[in-house]
Structure formats: C-alpha cells, structure tokens
Image 1 (cartoon, one colour):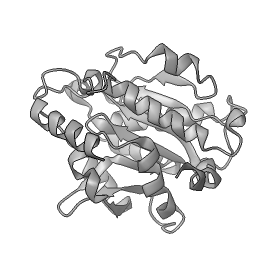
Image 2 (tube, rainbow, N blue to C red; image 1 turned 135 degrees about the vertical axis):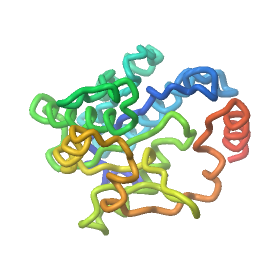
Image 3 (cartoon, rainbow, N blue to C red; image 1 turned 120 degrees about the vertical axis):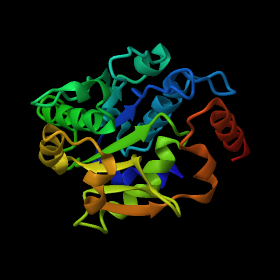
Image 4 (tube, rainbow, N blue to C red; image 1 turned 180 degrees about the vertical axis):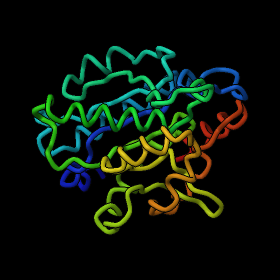
Length: 242
C-alpha cells in the first residue's frame, strides 16, 4: 500500500493537525480523546503522519514538518513519537493574528490556523536543507476525524496533478465538503491572509471557488465529523470494523 505513495511524496510540504476547537458538545478537547487502544487522538494522527515518512524513497533524507495548531492549549505529543523521528520535526504553531485584530480573534476558526501553517512552511523552506524544492501542498487534518493521514494522502494525492486550476483538494460526501480533510496549495497563502485580514472567517466562502472535491471512501463515512461522545464511540466502533 505505502509503496505506491513514495514516488509522489515530494509534493508534500508539511502537515497541520487542527486541534484547537472548543469541543463544547464533546465535553473534552478532541485532541485528548482516548481511543479503545489507549492511544490519544492527537498521537494517533501524529503517528500516521510519521508513517508517510516510511514511504519516502530515502526516508533518512526526507522532512515532513508536523505542525500542531492547538490554539495555544499546549497539547503534548507522546515523547516516543517525537524522539524516535528526528527527521520529521514537530512544532506547535499559534493561530495567525489578523492585521486589524478585533473581537473575532478569540474565535478565529480553522482558517487562521491554516494561514499560520502556510506562513510557517514559507519560513522553513530556506532553513530546512532536506525540504524538497518542489513541495507545494499542505495536508490539513482535523481532530474530529479518525481518517489516517496515510489513507487521506493516498486518496487526495492523485488528484493534484489532474487539476492545475484548483488550489484545494478535499473530501466530499453526498451533502457537503470536508474542507478540513484536504490539501492546500502553498500559493494561496497571500489570498488567504487578505481574506482573513478583511474580517472574513467562513471556510466555505473562501475555498469553494478553489476546490476540487474527491468522493469520501464509503467506509470512512463514520470516521469523521464527531462532535459528541456518542459520535466518537460510533467512530471508534467503525474504525475497529475496518
């Protein structure tokens, strides 16, 4: 499965895990949810991102920056994951602060986290010698999903070479898009910054003209968009059945 991924990993610049939501209906931060295996959800996602490294043609010479956007909640990552993978640096990033910051800043939403990740990758390009020069896509993973990064990348990656006019590639089902499970081209950074600076925060309004949708794999349907403990229990059960 992973062997087919290796030739195409050069286009992946980095990964951002969105873990800063309020999770009011869940009752606890989603990043801190515990899977039936005892693994925390944040560690689950980090671990699957690290599996992408194993698919690189030269794993010792490949960097996939892993950015954790947790709205400064300070969620930690299992030390075994970080210490054992020095070639895949992990970092917490603060949400982007708009030029004209106002009362919306406390509820910035996902776009300010994605903008911060895009800016971070731009800064890292010149300071990370192992970063591939052709890397041009950011993989976005939300902590309201159990879809693994490995599967998500394999599902979305083939599309990016087919839709040169699209800057976002994300999953969709019969009723709506999943914009926080997708690939964002680094070139949208300036436009996204301008959109946020103008006071806008609505994800769909920004991405719809830019997006190529990819149908959700049927057995992933129950793995995402969980907002309550009952939703999470169903997602865990569905994961166990795969």
